[in-house]
Image (cartoon, rainbow, N blue to C red; front, side, top):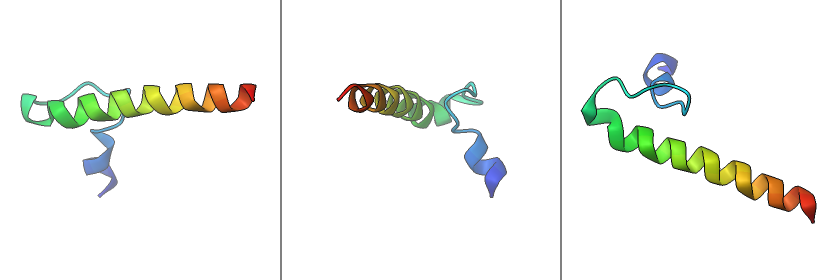
Length: 43
């Protein structure tokens, strides 16, 4: 099961074009969460 989820980690390249939307969403989500964390720490 973890192998299946591992392909969606933000540091992995998409293995096929079919997985690309999920890859893109995980990339954006990861960057967004990092920015939110940074701004919360500043408060």
